Structure formats: C-alpha cells, structure tokens
Image (spheres, rainbow, N blue to C red):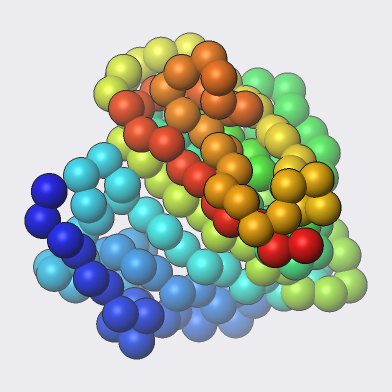
Length: 170
C-alpha cells in the first residue's frame, strides 16, 4: 500500500455557529479532490460542539460510524431505541446498515470535543447495530488498545476488514 501523508494544516476547517470542525477528508461543505478518504476510511472529523447544541435527528445507512468523545459528554438517541450519554474516554460504534435515524446533543454547559470516524462497510443493508465501550488508561498505560475490528476478539465488531486502535496516556 502506498504511504499516505496528510498534514494537519491541509485539513478542512468549518465554523458554523455552534459547530467547529476539522475534516481530514472531503466532507459536507469542504471539498478537496486530493482528500477523498483512504480505502474504506471515508471520514475523520474533529468536532467542537457548543453547550446546549448538537446535531438534530438525521439519517445514515450503510456506514460504520465510530465516535470517540475526548472532552465532555454527548447524548445519543436513535431509532433502534438507544438513548444515553457518551462521556470522555468512551467509544461508540453505530453500524447504520439498512438505516438509522439519530441525534447527538451536547446537553452540558461546556463545549464537547469528539472525533468521528466513518468506515464504509463490506456488508451492505445489514441489520443496524449499536455498541459502546469505555477504556481505562490506568489499566494498561502507553499501550495500543483495540477499539473495533472484524473478529470476535475485538471489543466492538465492525463490518469491514479493518481495525481501529488507540494508544492511551494515563
């Protein structure tokens, strides 16, 4: 596979009132034909969401949507019946499959920062699925931790031949 270098200063930067976002790949109103994704990786967005703001109910289908909250808590609600908070240090995987409607709202008084990663699934029109985990950096500091993958040994199962890992500092 050819090496891919994408300097952070080349990311798209969008500020829309309550939302400030940096896009690693073309997304929404920011388009750059040089940055359309890599293989099945389609989106890496670094979002800042103001207090008492967020994304109202909207649809997704046939996408693996991984959310990592870095600061604060985002409240998720979806058409599968899931409702609750995703706090800093937690990861959520929503496999949209045949279709899901959901919202993500910052109900707190401080800004929320999150990463959202979208991966194109290798199985289309599958049953939608929701998974959420919390990792504790104190248990195994300075090591790589598997977040999701295609195999049963992964904490969350993704519909793609890919793994997402993170290194956590205590």
